Image (cartoon, rainbow, N blue to C red; front, side, top):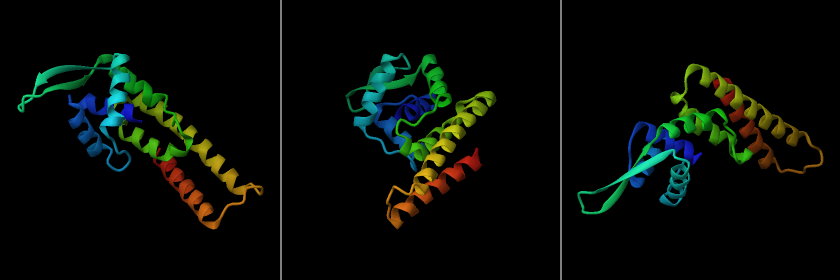
Length: 163
């Protein structure tokens, strides 16, 4: 999800790593906490793919800094990441879906329809998996565990209604 966040921000603003982290926190404050240790490797991967590029300049403080910007390839990659949405960890799907939904203003109407259908399928499948887990008589879970899963199911249902 960090790559979606980085490309989304760079689609709107050129930024240094520090500023990029601050803007990501502003846009995705409820769902994503970043650090330089997370942003740096993701920027390197994106640069290797030709999705971002940078230019160096001296800051007012006399330090050489890199300002990153998205490329045409990066804009296409952002759309592709959204259209092929799949949470790397299915147990983070609710949060990952919220991050992706926050970046959908870069999609065309047709792409948005495709994104929503894909996300809907992933959410419904995960909901079924959770419901089946609750029904499984061989899984012995506590009442707190059961309630926690039920809350996750409710969150998924709310996202499904949003779509």
